[in-house]
Image (tube, rainbow, N blue to C red; front, top):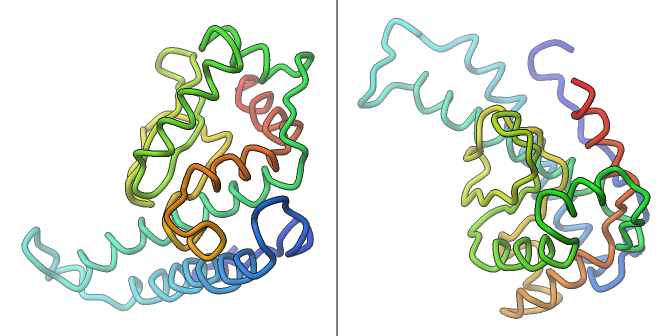
Length: 201
């Protein structure tokens, strides 16, 4: 892939396929918000090739501002793609799945993980991400208040967008209702595939 050639990926399900997350929200969220990050990432990558790097400094430079927005838009693209790719299921994590066994091992039970995930999502300003942390080999629910915040060395497995555009049209200020709907739509087999890939490496 060349510079500025990132593509907007289609939803892996129909706009109206999710329970409790409307067709309209999915259209706005995917076609406007997510697509915007992909397009801006492309624009920035091309722009960075033309900037005068000799003027880079910690106070202000065109290069510096573009590099910061590059990370923001790249992470916005990646997190949204994970968000879409792990939805479309029935929310049930079968006990036989490797990810379900790992959650039970690291959190004590699936219910304790869910309690921690919901609490993390309620306080997050941007994202809550279930990650495999290579530094301790355990699963963690990490909070990222902005796209370009995260924990280095982790592998994201499941991400929920907690910015208001993801739920306000459907739920108003009732974020808890959105979290409940999200969890009912998680495709744990897809999360499991991501975990098994990460665990092998």
